[in-house]
Image: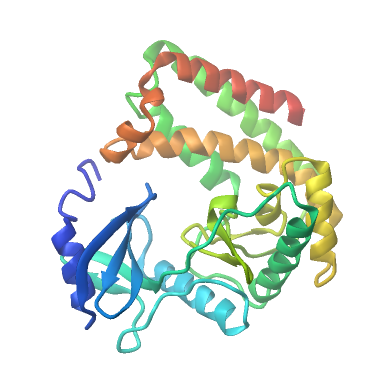
Length: 314
C-alpha cells in the first residue's frame, strides 16, 4: 500500500464507528500513542470511555485478528489480567467506513518499576500464567518469530526503500547478511526449543500497573515463539532476568537453554526496527515520528550497530 493508510480516518468516523455499536459517544476523543495502528480513547455518555483500535489495512487477515481476540479472551477467562475486546452481537472484529476495528474497555495504569525486584518477580509469575494458557494450543493464522519475519523481510524492505542512501546499499546488505548468518548459527547451536503462543511485544509500554497489580495490553504482535521472547525486553541486566525467572519458576518450568537465544532475539529486533520504519514510510505518521531515518548518518550508525551485534553473537 503506497498511499497514506489512515487518510480517511477522521474524528467523525471514529465517533460514528462507536455509535454503530450502540454506544453514545459524548464527543471527547483522545488519540493514543500508536504507529502501527490508530488508537483512540472515546468518551461515552454516562459510562466509562472505551478504547477504539483501528487496524492497519492489509497487515493482518481477519482470521489472524480474530485469533488475537480469542487469545485475549481466553487469557481473561483464565483470570490472567489482559484487556480483551468487547463483544457486540457476539462479534469482536467490527467494520465501519472501510476500516476494521475493535473496542475495548479502558484500563489505565502506570509503567512497571523494572528496578524493583518485587515487581520483576510479579511480572515473572504473570508471564508464566500467560504462557501456561499460550501452551495449550497453537496459533493457526498468526506469524512465527523467525528469521524470515524478523530478518529477511525487513532487510528487503530497507533495500527497496529510498531511505537507504545508494552509496550505503552494499554496506547495509553485507552487515545484514553477516548478522543473519550469526543469528542462524546461534539458533542452530541452541537447537530446538519449545514454542508457544506469546504476547510477542512484551515491553514495559504494554504492561500497565495499578494498585491491584499489573495487566497486559495490546496483543497486536502476538505470535508463536520461545518463552524467553516475552521476558528479555523486561530485563535490563542479568540480575533483572534472574528476578523475572525466580517469579516465573514459581508457576512454570523454564528451559535455561533459551537464555542463549536472547542476543539473537535482540539482534533480530534491531534489524526489524529499521525495516519496519522503511516499510511504513508512506504513512505520514512515520516521517513525523522518525525523522532521523531520512538521514544518511543514521544509516551509517545502524550498519555499525549490525556489525556490533554480529560481533557479540560470533
